[in-house]
Length: 429
Image 1 (cartoon, rainbow, N blue to C red):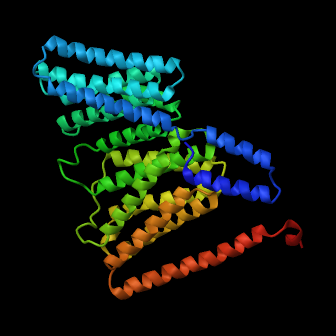
Image 2 (tube, helix red, strand yellow):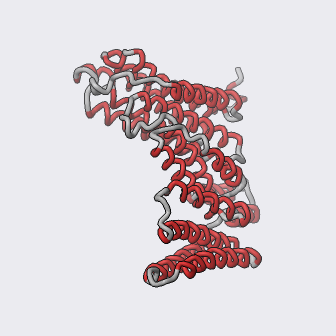
Image 3 (spheres, rainbow, N blue to C red):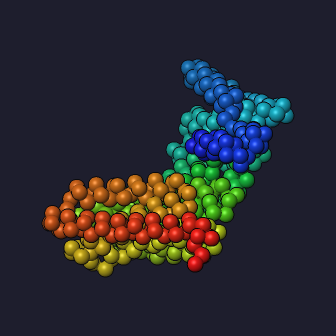
């Protein structure tokens, strides 16, 4: 999906290129028509989807008002007719060329099916096993998504899949849910070929949800600081995968790993920075097998991103930023974070990672990296001002040295860019 910021920038560039004579007005008009036709804002489809949902809500309210007075067979027949009728409407709209309306009707069918499962369980007083119900909804959503190509049904399937796996994880007190992939892999295969960004994001978030459950029941058994290192490594792997997709192009689903990976990376690193300011929080935390697996995956993804990237202007600074972030938990595990030198090292690594993200974003023209690095740098400064590293004099000296280093880097970068921008004839001796 083309973003509004991209369209505005493209419009400004087209106007400038036409004015400079680099592009004809006819070619600019053709580009505008092509962009307008590609993933445009489909108002009729959205209005149809919202209208279908309102009608479904109206039917649900009517049925609920008269539910107790209806015989069981009538109730079952109504659920069946609702599902079949919605699917029939979806098929008819698809034949007429209304893909958005067909998707809305198919999604309503899946939602009616989900409500029907809950109502049948209530009618026949079945044991309260909501994860099993979520599994059935996920299976129904996958079937409709595969047979009718419905993106909305696939969205419901991903949500139900996470509910089923999360419920079983909670019931088993943190047992690894390997059965998650029995449904996730088919859903991922369906999502891979879809152009819908919501489906892509949910595919990535569903995997992230399962990865959150890998360390076990850390919610019920208590939080351990080793989880920050695990989350940091997973986030770094997501960022590297998203950057590779961005560099290679055509991998829209993997590209959705980048924003969520950056969110987790910034959150985990700033959380690590808060820890050094508290004596209790400076503990190392427990390293377990998931830490080593996550670090191995992260380092492999970073190496692949740096080694096989076409545009290394942003790949190498990005790899540096990720590696600097991964070093932070090692400082805690070494025991240095309890003293002043270790606190300075952690703060320096976090600030260095933020600057490397900004460099990667600016040199590669990737706005998300620039925003993430700037946000992390600003939050780090606020955290360091909130509580001091050592004494106020120590903190003042730290900021002075860090600022001097950045000014030196800025001066060197300015000279380097000026030299690279010099014309070839002028640069020749």
